[in-house]
Image 1 (spheres, rainbow, N blue to C red):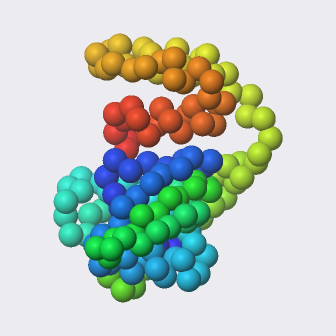
Image 2 (image 1 turned 90 degrees about the vertical axis):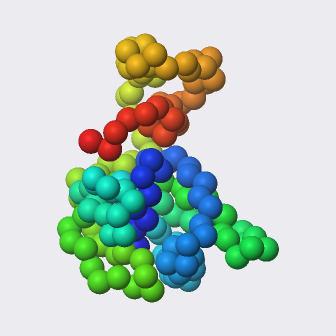
Length: 165
């Protein structure tokens, strides 16, 4: 699976992530994905995210390209829909300038389960409020009240300043 090691860009199952693709290697990656499975793995880089080939964290999340458009200046605007988390088994040879990995889905098979999760939104919001208060963060909590647990978790994970660890 092709991987995009983009610091701070997080996608989780059932979430969405808009991306602006402009580097040649990632344009190649997206075009290859569109021609194939439409899957791209989002993985957080370890250490120096600015390194040419940063070390990767062991876990990522596959996103399916559900929308794309080309711009006049040769960029691609895409939307990834989160499918399932994965563990990286090994890194493979690069293809067209982008990185690829072999993945194992087994530990996260429940990501594909569409049944009710049993997660309590009020508990999640209470924990997030404690986190925000300790870090003096300003959050519009009213915007979260109407979200279902999966969307709530995705929104908080993507918006609060968590480290990849």
